[in-house]
Length: 318
Image 1 (cartoon, rainbow, N blue to C red):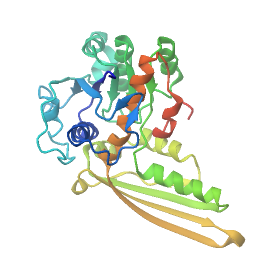
Image 2: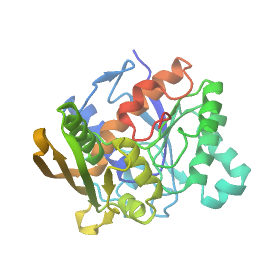
Image 3: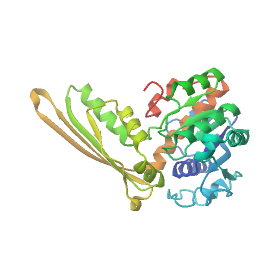
Image 4: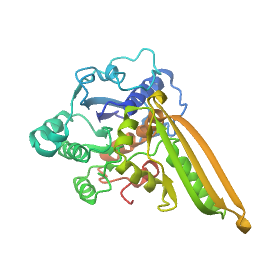
């Protein structure tokens, strides 16, 4: 029987809520609705155990992880009525000050990663020093590191080299949602090219209501760069600033426009609206990234596994 992957989560936001609840649902029902890979690296979607969790919010620290995922400002809905306790108490994470100066705090976190094969970094984007501090702690703990934020870790050659030399997987940066704006927009642009049409212009607008989205709307530099990486059409596609609308809660609404020319210069215009539960789309990819990371760790494959490229907006090659 395959051993379950032990995961430490950094950040107890909506993505982790969707991830934890989804695994509980699949374990209870045996259903595979919305699952891309029922088995990956010998592990099913339920073959993941949480062994540690870190957050900074006073409303989450000190609580069982299964309770903390519902603490405000999280707003992903309950999809499991009776969620059992996880047995993991959320611990205080690293602040920006800790990350920049306090080596003892980094060592503390590394010690608390004991038992984790994979560290899932799901803290708010836009905190580069904090992301690097957790990557350092994962290195010291001998754990794989999965960065689902837009902060630069895996695509930084210095970090990639260190993880590769240590025989530790480093997956990142910034996941591509299971069915989100980037993957849909990219597929449409690729279809245009495959069918011989000439792209004239294109744009996308993204609106969301999660706390993660609010943070990105205020600190969108790395996110915009990452989204353009995912589209691969720098200079031909415009991205409007992210818009935070609290009433959308965990939904994201995206608008995509494409203007093109077909045979003889005939105009083609496409407008599309996409509405999804943003955290659910993230969790549907996280479950694959975590299993790939655990499988690679067990095989001592350091660096970023090439099979993750389609699951990430900004893998090391970009």
